Length: 125
Image (cartoon, rainbow, N blue to C red; front, side, top):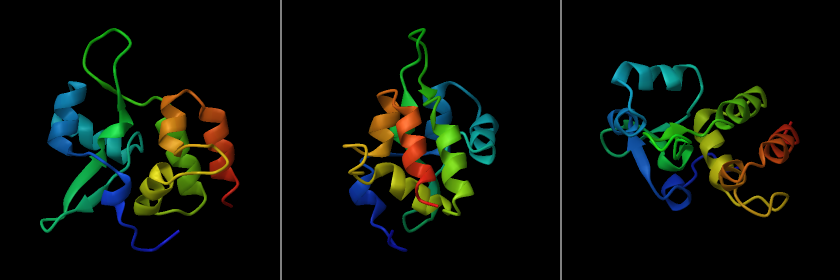
Protein backbone atom coordinates (compact mmCIF):
# COMPACT_ATOMS: atom_id res chain seq x y z
CA UNK A 1 0.00 0.00 0.00
CA UNK A 2 1.13 3.50 -0.65
CA UNK A 3 2.05 5.70 2.24
CA UNK A 4 0.15 8.68 0.81
CA UNK A 5 -2.88 7.27 -0.98
CA UNK A 6 -5.27 9.53 -2.81
CA UNK A 7 -8.20 8.54 -0.65
CA UNK A 8 -10.49 10.98 -2.46
CA UNK A 9 -10.09 8.88 -5.60
CA UNK A 10 -11.17 5.77 -3.64
CA UNK A 11 -13.84 7.16 -1.31
CA UNK A 12 -16.68 8.98 -3.08
CA UNK A 13 -18.35 10.60 -0.04
CA UNK A 14 -17.04 11.68 3.35
CA UNK A 15 -18.87 12.66 6.54
CA UNK A 16 -17.53 14.94 9.26
CA UNK A 17 -18.51 13.69 12.73
CA UNK A 18 -21.49 16.07 13.15
CA UNK A 19 -22.95 14.74 9.88
CA UNK A 20 -22.28 11.15 10.95
CA UNK A 21 -24.12 11.82 14.21
CA UNK A 22 -27.09 13.34 12.35
CA UNK A 23 -27.35 10.49 9.87
CA UNK A 24 -27.36 7.78 12.54
CA UNK A 25 -29.49 9.75 14.97
CA UNK A 26 -27.06 10.10 17.88
CA UNK A 27 -25.35 12.97 19.67
CA UNK A 28 -21.91 14.20 18.70
CA UNK A 29 -20.24 12.61 21.75
CA UNK A 30 -21.75 9.24 20.82
CA UNK A 31 -20.35 9.62 17.30
CA UNK A 32 -16.91 10.32 18.81
CA UNK A 33 -17.28 7.18 20.92
CA UNK A 34 -17.92 5.15 17.75
CA UNK A 35 -14.52 6.31 16.48
CA UNK A 36 -12.80 5.70 19.83
CA UNK A 37 -14.28 2.20 20.09
CA UNK A 38 -13.35 1.40 16.46
CA UNK A 39 -16.91 0.99 15.12
CA UNK A 40 -15.84 3.41 12.39
CA UNK A 41 -12.48 4.67 11.24
CA UNK A 42 -11.62 7.87 9.46
CA UNK A 43 -8.92 10.37 8.63
CA UNK A 44 -8.25 14.08 8.86
CA UNK A 45 -8.88 15.67 5.47
CA UNK A 46 -8.79 19.00 3.75
CA UNK A 47 -6.87 22.17 4.47
CA UNK A 48 -8.53 22.45 7.91
CA UNK A 49 -7.75 18.78 8.71
CA UNK A 50 -11.33 17.95 9.65
CA UNK A 51 -11.80 14.36 10.85
CA UNK A 52 -14.14 12.51 8.47
CA UNK A 53 -15.37 8.98 7.89
CA UNK A 54 -16.50 7.40 4.61
CA UNK A 55 -20.28 7.58 4.10
CA UNK A 56 -20.20 3.99 2.77
CA UNK A 57 -19.74 2.86 6.39
CA UNK A 58 -23.45 3.57 6.90
CA UNK A 59 -26.33 1.34 5.82
CA UNK A 60 -30.10 1.69 6.07
CA UNK A 61 -31.50 0.55 9.40
CA UNK A 62 -33.52 -2.65 9.28
CA UNK A 63 -36.46 -0.91 10.97
CA UNK A 64 -36.50 1.86 8.37
CA UNK A 65 -35.29 4.48 10.87
CA UNK A 66 -32.04 6.42 10.83
CA UNK A 67 -29.04 4.86 9.14
CA UNK A 68 -26.70 2.67 11.17
CA UNK A 69 -23.03 1.83 11.09
CA UNK A 70 -22.30 -1.24 8.96
CA UNK A 71 -22.43 -3.99 11.63
CA UNK A 72 -19.51 -6.03 10.23
CA UNK A 73 -17.17 -3.04 10.00
CA UNK A 74 -15.81 -3.01 13.57
CA UNK A 75 -14.48 -6.57 13.55
CA UNK A 76 -12.83 -5.98 10.18
CA UNK A 77 -11.25 -2.72 11.39
CA UNK A 78 -9.92 -4.55 14.44
CA UNK A 79 -8.40 -7.32 12.28
CA UNK A 80 -6.70 -4.72 10.07
CA UNK A 81 -5.43 -2.78 13.09
CA UNK A 82 -4.06 -6.05 14.52
CA UNK A 83 -2.14 -6.44 11.24
CA UNK A 84 -0.44 -3.12 12.03
CA UNK A 85 -2.28 -0.87 9.58
CA UNK A 86 -2.79 2.76 10.64
CA UNK A 87 -6.24 4.26 10.10
CA UNK A 88 -5.40 5.86 6.74
CA UNK A 89 -4.25 2.50 5.36
CA UNK A 90 -7.30 0.75 6.83
CA UNK A 91 -9.54 3.13 4.87
CA UNK A 92 -7.40 2.63 1.77
CA UNK A 93 -7.58 -1.18 2.06
CA UNK A 94 -11.36 -1.13 2.57
CA UNK A 95 -11.93 0.95 -0.58
CA UNK A 96 -9.25 -0.37 -2.95
CA UNK A 97 -10.30 -3.10 -5.40
CA UNK A 98 -9.35 -6.53 -4.10
CA UNK A 99 -8.82 -9.31 -6.65
CA UNK A 100 -9.49 -12.07 -4.12
CA UNK A 101 -12.91 -10.57 -3.35
CA UNK A 102 -13.80 -9.43 -6.86
CA UNK A 103 -14.83 -6.06 -5.40
CA UNK A 104 -13.69 -3.62 -2.78
CA UNK A 105 -13.74 -4.97 0.77
CA UNK A 106 -16.33 -2.39 1.84
CA UNK A 107 -18.64 -3.49 -1.01
CA UNK A 108 -18.16 -7.11 0.06
CA UNK A 109 -19.00 -6.20 3.68
CA UNK A 110 -22.13 -4.36 2.55
CA UNK A 111 -23.10 -7.50 0.59
CA UNK A 112 -22.81 -9.65 3.73
CA UNK A 113 -19.48 -11.32 2.89
CA UNK A 114 -17.86 -10.64 6.27
CA UNK A 115 -15.96 -13.96 6.54
CA UNK A 116 -14.34 -13.55 3.12
CA UNK A 117 -13.28 -9.98 3.88
CA UNK A 118 -11.78 -10.92 7.24
CA UNK A 119 -9.85 -13.81 5.68
CA UNK A 120 -8.42 -11.39 3.12
CA UNK A 121 -7.54 -8.96 5.94
CA UNK A 122 -5.82 -11.70 7.94
CA UNK A 123 -3.81 -12.70 4.87
CA UNK A 124 -2.06 -9.31 5.00
CA UNK A 125 0.00 -10.44 7.99
